Length: 47
Image 1 (cartoon, rainbow, N blue to C red):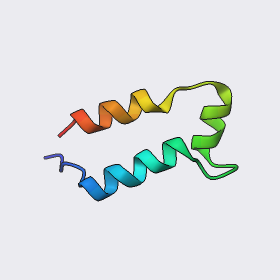
Image 2: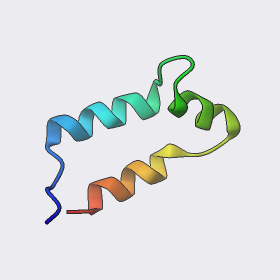
Image 3: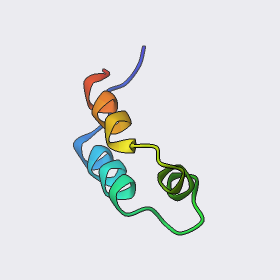
Image 4: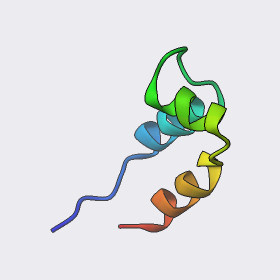
């Protein structure tokens, strides 16, 4: 069974998608033009 993400974890993920660490995979994806806010929205919907 999949465990729902806590609000604290969701806030951390959201913060990282908006302001990724330099050199991270999130930063690379953002530089490539991938909109990670859409992925974050899907994470919020999953149980």
